[in-house]
Structures are given as structure tokens and as C-alpha cells.
Length: 369
Image 1 (cartoon, rainbow, N blue to C red):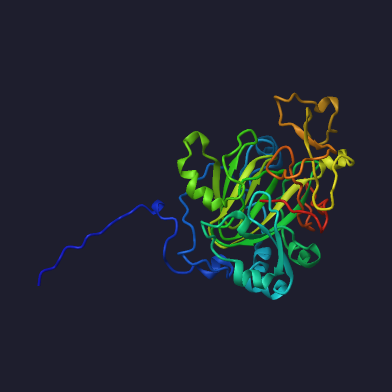
Image 2 (tube, rainbow, N blue to C red):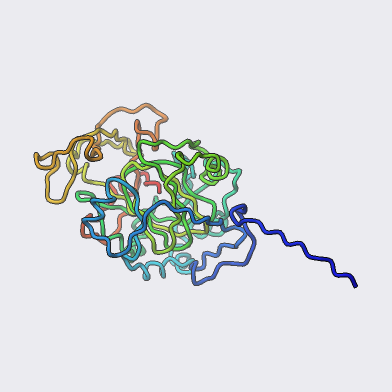
């Protein structure tokens, strides 16, 4: 009998965006099963520095707080919080509670309320690459602290903060391929509890090319491959237990590679404390305008004091809010009308930046991240 030679074809993994296989291990996903054909491959690209628990607060302020993103590893232990975020645990406690979903476009105009169980059963699906952001519902932020407070009390936020700021939590769960398109706001931290989340970031002076109603997945498939090297974003994939810090006004978009559970801590508040009458609320969102000031906030120094004065070239400008009337149709992602969104108040208080309840309260908008 003649034996025909076999022909083996090898293709690089990077050519595949979706790939077949079995379910991921329960031990690594908390029950938020992501089938291999729905998970997104990871090419290993990372241009964000990782720092371990040896990083000091002084180093964080000097090297990262006002200048560049950084990934923090091993600074906090959230084993207990992760145990509370398994699929079975969350559904048992919060399944009947209403959650508010927002469209996954830059402006998040449309919102829908439905039971958490229904969201998990019917909407927590892999992202359709052809869907628009306005057609995609995303659960992140808009958390009712009265209902979710017991969960957030288990969370240990990053130990670092920016002096004079306070923090507010936003919690989310989303399917593979989902994410939010490019936008910007104040500084903050984002931690992955289960799954993997890829971040794309640009500094404030480098506005990325994107359509506000296209999903991050669509941008990644259509625009990202054609970017020349000098237009590529700063990027990296964040894994469970890792925390990404993003500075003030940095553009960022996210792409969940698996079904992901995540929580962000948004830093804000110093400017409201110094200028409490300069932001206004129209019944839905705050409307701030950012104004440059030639001061920097350093530990133990009063903003605006002689010893703390810095030139505009030396340090990033501090922004304060001014009460103005804005044209309709402007929204987050624009320096003309940057949204100040709602996030959920946590109970844990970091040493250098205490966590507070969002200034918008329970009825306002939420930060994006």
C-alpha cells in the first residue's frame, strides 16, 4: 500500500484573531468561561513599564504620576475581592439587581437598565466586529453604591494616589472583543480581576485617529494594522492582579481579550476643593472647561504658593474648572467639553489619596476606562 506524504502547513499565530480550542480553566477565570474560539489572541506587544512592590510613593510621583502610564504588580492583595467576583457569587448576590448599561461609543449617550442576571445570560457575548458602538451595550460604572457597596468594601485599591485628589470606583464586566473607544479624562488606576484587557494609550498632545461610533475592535482590525511605527499607541495587556495607572488627559481605548471583570479607581477632587464654585451640573452631567495653571501639586505645599510655582514647560499644567455655557453636542474626548463622570464610592482609603464618593452622586454619569 502506497503511503502518501503528509503536508503540514504552519502559519504564525499572529495571523489569527480568533482561534479554536477548549474552555479556559475555571481556576483562572472565576467561572466567566471564555471559549477559545471567542478569546482574542495576544501578540505580546507591551510598551508600558511594569513595576513591582519595590516601587515607592516618591518614585511613583516623580516618574509616572504626571508623565506616563505604568503597570503595578504585587502592591495589593485582592484575593478576597476576586473570590467575591466569581460568576456564581455575583449572580447569587446581585442577579436580581438592576444594572445600567451604556453604549460602547465615545459619548455613551444611550443607557439601558436591566437585571444583572439578564445581562450575563443574554448580553455578555463576544463583540460582533461589524456592530457600531451605539449598538453595543457595555456594563462599566453607573454602579449603585447602595446595592454594590458590600462588594466594594472588599477591594483594596492601589496604595498610591496624587496628593490632593480622592478616588471613586467604577466596576464592570464585559465580553471578549468588547471595550470602549478612545476618550480621555482625569488620572486613575484600572485593575483586572478576571480575564485580560488590552490598553491603547496616547499622550494628551497626540490625538489618535478614530471614529467615535466605531468599537475598539473595529478600530483594531481596520486602523491599527496600517499605522506607521511613529503613530502606534503605547499599549499593553493587563492580566489578573495587575493595575494600570494612566495620567491625566491621556487618550485611551480598551479591548477585552476574554470575558473580563475589572475595577477602576478614578482620581479627582483637588480642583473642586480649591475652586468649589467653578464646575456646574445641568441635572445629568458636569460641564467643565480645563484651564491651564502654572502650578504643580506637591506633598506639603499649597497650590499656588511661591515655593510651589513651576513654569508651564517644567511640569504638566494643573486644570481647574470654569463655569461656562457649552454648545450642544459636545462630549467627552473633546477639550471643549470634557465630561466629568460618575463612579461608585469605595470604602477603603488609600494613604496618599483618600477614596471619596463621586461628586456627581448616584444619579450622574460615570467615568470611562
